[in-house]
Image (tube, rainbow, N blue to C red; front, side, top):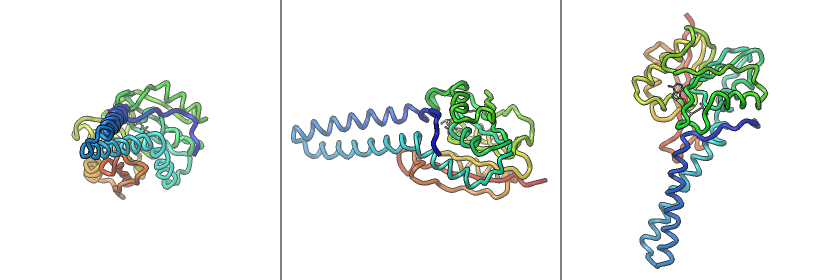
Length: 243
Ligand SMILES: C[S@@+](CC[C@H](N)C(=O)[O-])C[C@H]1O[C@@H](n2cnc3c(N)ncnc32)[C@H](O)[C@@H]1O
């Protein structure tokens, strides 16, 4: 799906640091080869390739891979088009607008605290502009709020999504609070879909404890690696059992 908005870079310090390390190792390798220090030159060359591969993979994931994988995830949900959807930690709207493009009479709400450490240029106005550029401004509502205390009544949404956001919360206890909140605002029969790194086992345990059904967790492919396979994105899906 062709996107018209600009969705920035996730965790922008990461590719910067790895990019600098890659350039540094490359320069060191060149100097060592030139001076005939073969052993160190080989080591530095290996470091160069390691950092370069990590930087490239990260940049690909944040600018392309994320969009590709979320298109696949959303297609598999077979949305009717009239759903009410919440995106927890929507940032500049990469997933929010992808959802909105699949809605007809439905609406998608994005909630965020706008951390520019977590995503470059993160701001409510930027997200609204992206929604407008994608032609879905009329299907989108953007709120400022913390996902640990969502400003919505119980059972408001048919679908809750979250992309690469919950791990940004510091402690597992607070991440659990976000999951509990996401589940609280879900209607009975609704679905929750989370793509994230690090603590997805904690999210899964929390959802099971809340009585969620159809809980599934699986690692996503290379397009969604944040530098290397150890930092792969995991997809977690579950449903709220109808009363
Ligand atoms: C890496 S960005 C991902 C943004 C977007 N979901 C995407 O995939 O492009 C993480 C987002 O989570 C937001 N965030 C972090 N902690 C949050 C919290 N406690 N409540 C709401 N949003 C939060 C950040 O502001 C940031 O926009």
